[in-house]
Amino acid sequence: MSPTPARITAVDTHDIRFPTSRELDGSDAMNPDPDYSAAYVVLRTDAADGHEGHGFAFTIGRGNEVQVAAIDALRGHLLGRDLAELCADPATLNRDLIGDSQLRWLGPEKGVMHMAIGAVVNAVWDLAAKRAGLPLWRLLAEAEPEWLVGQIDFRYLTDALTPKEALALLHRAREGAGQRTARLLERGYPAYTTSPGWLGYDDEKLTRLAARAVTDGFTQIKLKVGADLDDDIRRCRVARSVIGPDIRMAVDANQRWDVEEAIRWTEALAAFDPYWIEEPTSPDDILGHAAIRRAVAPVKVATGEHAHNRIVFKQLLQAGALDVVQIDAARVGGVPENLAILLLAAKFGVPVCPHAGGVGLCELVQHLSMFDYVALTGTTENRVIEYVDHLHDHFLDPVVIRQGHYMAPTAPGFSAALRPEALARYTYPGGEFWAADLDATKKGHAA
Image (cartoon, rainbow, N blue to C red; front, top):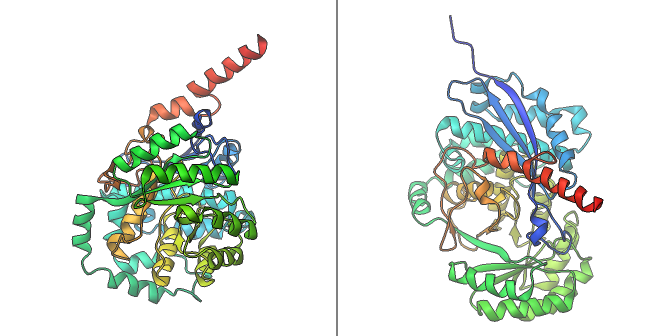
């Protein structure tokens, strides 16, 4: 009698919110008071190894409960699923989730529902990597190219990238992959830091954190801009005086401007030698990005953290609308869609510098960039992963930064698991922190 196959037995969701608005961590021109949050999902199984799959969608506070509800709506696609079959071919789940005609109507392939799919799909890849005993970047980098290409949905992409072309890119990169893995484990992957540049920080804090970034080995920092031009000029002057001429300084408008305004504002900051202007206008305005890029060169245009899906990235690349692709591990439909975007960027020869300004995003996206280096592009030239120094202590496998580099994760999985005590303390609204906060607010009103 054959043993009963292991299956997914539960899909647990949590509304996790961290009070980052209290210190203005994460503040920018469009989001002045974010509470970094995660609509968090845990896939539980009856497997003897006890492994669980962890994933999340990143939000910034209010509305996180809506994102949790969207993940809950996917539970029926997961419960009872054969674990061995799922981990051997995660694309089957991807096709089922994207292909659910009633849920698809809520997108299609964009917004809250698509982010929910991304959280669940990432949790499956976390589970697959744990069962393989590998960190996700190694699972991807060491996979057969044919299997990897089979995990990707090429629908809507073949006018820019075919499966045959993707396969050729992956096969070409196999030469030297072992040496690159060894180099990555020894040296890590280059990072840049946004920690000095949040818009709500005063000049003293900006100065102190910018100086520390240089001391810590970062060769690029980023400043948030876009609320007040005179303030931005002053802050850029302060930062440049601290870091000197040889450290790159990027600026990020977080979608604040119209096209002409973006051009004027960027030109006004050009004296401080910004390396790129990030999200200068609406993330949906492909032609606007192209017009800005033509006008502000040699300042580069970087965007992508709010791009809905692989199709938007395809068009940004086809239109020559950006110099830097910024993937987000929790915005699109999970690992396979980000693989498609990495392949598109590789074909067009555009570097990928991921967005990671949010809870857990550093932990996730490092795996994707490391796969890109080892098994796709083979280079870190002009490529850096964003780093923010917030909330890593809440993760079981937090990022490790040394001399401005992400050190390669070695623990199996996608580094997505939060510590149990973080769930107990920051679940909203009943966790220890939020319950005490609500009680204090009530007492304050009563007084």
